[in-house]
Length: 160
Image (tube, rainbow, N blue to C red; front, side):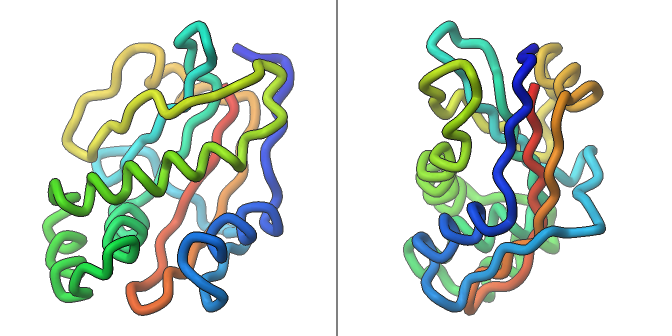
């Protein structure tokens, strides 16, 4: 666990999503946070010692919208995936790239350089360290993200 729980604000997250998805993308603070459970995707960011320091927890809507927008996959395919509570492989590959860029929102962790450490899909059981970080975060920030042409999803940023 880190003693420095610095998380970005909505303005910082908004700069990242606008850079990824265009000027019509919006990230704003969300009073209705993501509920951790079988309908969430967990993205892990680790330090140079492979210790998870930050998590992005998102609903399947955000994962599909963000992944599909990267290569302009049909919004109909996205709607079907969300309804099925799934992130298809082609969208997951793109989502992984989006999350590689998202590491830039965690610049001041007190642990130096962070890298994408893995993605747990909705149906995957969470490992012990991830489950603990979800249950006992030392910092939290919740956002709603609008991805133009695709829709709205929710993300929660956690400091571990």
